Image (cartoon, rainbow, N blue to C red; front, side, top):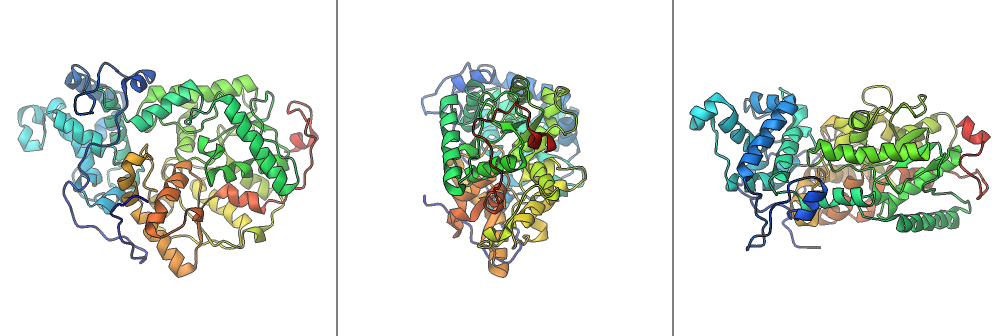
Length: 524
């Protein structure tokens, strides 16, 4: 492990408000996207490398930035509202995991918002134009742009601060707007923009082509058969399947994600539900949200619609990915709808937990909970699921469904402290497009509040493992928890637990075609 300053954990079940350390995280921000990546996302790319290894801003960058800010405040009236109504009450100051972990006052949500708000006031309000010092307005300079790029990539857009804001200001929307402005003046994040360009080029964040994906799935089939003695299929591009599964690309190769994918496959297999992945739209994640780009969100979402039409599926199910589910639940019908060609019996979209919990309730899955008796589980509520979506047909379903499934397949479960779960959950520290090694110090420090809660239930209630339903959370935790004295394997997928407890009984013909009549399929 690299040598970073790691916050000390007390294991007392609460987080102390830190002392202020001005400019503790001042810096250059993450690596900057090259012009080719900008161009692929339809962003301006007329800039080049400077002598110091940094990229220049585009020509007329100031005019372009202000034009884009003006466009966004009119396009999204909520943004205009958030920029106008903050009264600096301080309710959000200690709610951000990055402020808690870094002590940098610019990571207080109100202070981070003000980096953009001060410029907005200078150019778009009467007081700011005529009495800038009186209202804290500032000119837009390259130094201000540098601050934007650095600190707006120290916000994971988790929206925890908005839960506590008496005015309901959504700091995530401010961060998204700032990043979109930055993309339009040559300051795009390499990590985010390169990932999005791979989705457009290949179909997933990894740039994994169809032959490699098919080979990976074939290997998983062999692993499951060797382990269980039963042939469980992992179909790809099979026309006529009932379900199109759209899941994060980490599920194809990373631990513990791939164990969750095995769980999905076993659930579909045992329930007799025909399903398929799509090589064209194999990626559930939508990083367009992280950079605030509606255009790129829509381009990614439309791939899912096109795949569903081409494969003639009846419903779309999303795997364990936090922001993929938020985009799907909150925006998919707007971005890529209507989905009137799908079976109206099912909601668009469905989460895999909704499918699994429904089958458990209906008694269609045989579960041996003792298979997970080597674990005492707790659950991490992922930000975008907890604060940006729902599951099922009632409020709070996004909190109940994961816990219901865990309790159905495990005998030992406890929750972390109440002010660290549900809609008050702490971010993993790597969300919002920050899951890149050039931000590792920030990720480690941002994980501190969640690690405090985990340490508390570990010491007080014997917790051995923490489950999650977000690909970024799993990747973040497996990378950073060793810095806090935990082990990588203590992070598990919820469907990894399902996979272990599910008793496979159903034998099917290997040659079965998904569009043939199948009584089991009809019953499911």
